[in-house]
Image 1: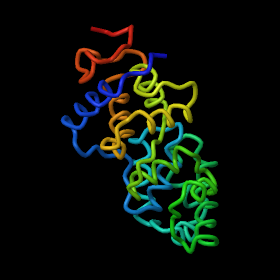
Image 2: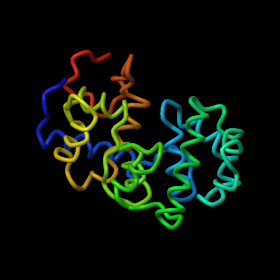
Image 3: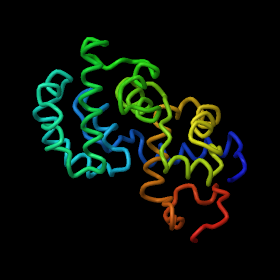
Length: 214
């Protein structure tokens, strides 16, 4: 775990991320808040590319909780069987759709607690939805962000909640909305787990990671 960086260094890092990509976007395809919830729930232990391939057909026929319930669990399975843990995930999609209809009038709620009450939706999924759909600067910490937070010293922490809190505390407000997307994309394509691409890293000169590949 790297030492906590200073405010000025973190500001410079995110200034570079913003200059490189001012409006970073999540890579899960969706058309509304409901399809985003489903896509993120399906993405656990799966790639965004694999989820997108499965959900294009699914969302074409079921883009609301009511339509998903009409499709039924077996219908969902037919679309998502290429995704890992597809049977359990299909069951959760139907359960969360039923919960949305029964308790929220078919609408996706805007609070983290309410989102986390949905079957198959954890804190990370809730934060993704709050950030991407509702524009709240929630920080969804996945394995990439956990790695980047600790390697760089931007947000060191022993678990995902600690890293989430550190991002909220350490990242300047002007970068907060897009912070988790910049970090996810950086971890996915540059600061990879096994072999970080330090020669092509925007923040390599600011990063204290001792095992650089330069």
